[in-house]
Length: 47
Image 1 (cartoon, rainbow, N blue to C red):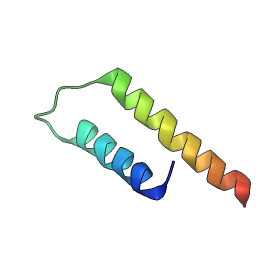
Image 2: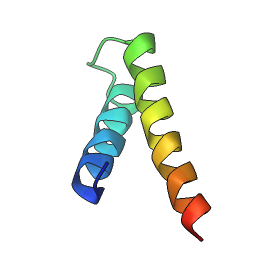
Image 3: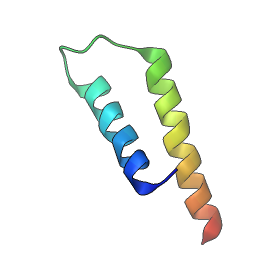
């Protein structure tokens, strides 16, 4: 995942969690969290 896609996922996650007008989608939130954490683990492994 490149930085653009990573940032888009973070933005979507922020939107889903913080916008009161957006219906809660637990499955989508977990998918985004998994993708973001996987990306972070890959970066940590390169260090």
